Length: 210
Image (cartoon, rainbow, N blue to C red; front, side, top):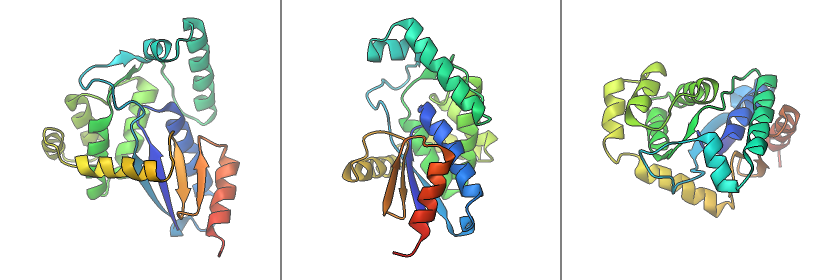
């Protein structure tokens, strides 16, 4: 069985959902028969490349919410993450994630997709470190066990642009307008960072013979 997951590294619910889904998968009796593939999705493809914005300021500007309301929402997210054993630092910055997605596609060819995603989520949300500029991405790749020089070559080229666009096109064809979104064996869709029990039920249902 295959599970396709659309997500964005700048999405806090993708971070939480990843942990919840993985907890469900760890307890799934047929977990060794499950292939997990992550796909690219940009929450804000219009964000200027090379420019980052404090997340609090970005949310205030994007949704017109009062600062206190944004800070309360972030505090709630931090508590949700902590309940899953995850760190959460609201001082991180938002930025364009296209290059990260290109890097992730390259990491997949190196058999290191999971390692890169795990490390990137941990440092971006847990430590408020950048996942946007070339130097930060090269460092991410290196710490995920990838070759730093090769990572730099990828980032300084246009490699894997087509792969990112193909993921985004497939998301549109499937009607995916927000992330995280999970597609189990191309039969069942699960939207959002659902509780672990919901993922467990979805895995069981998708694995059963039609």
